[in-house]
Length: 96
Image (cartoon, rainbow, N blue to C red; front, side, top):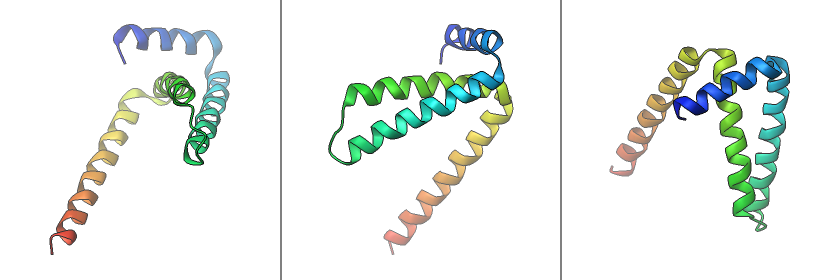
């Protein structure tokens, strides 16, 4: 996300408040989940998935602001490292 986009997200959180934006995040996550379920059962609307994904990304940035960007980023790094370790383990088992 660009600096300008982050700045706008901060303004949105300041304007609407954290509780409202948490509720909005839940709404957007449900909408994305619905579109992904449609995609899995053969009713994919790619544009709808992209639209909902964009909404979730915007809301995710607002949640980063609400819960602390540094803390969230640290946990993201931990999770990515763990996934790399898991993938490495899978490759090692496959090569045996």
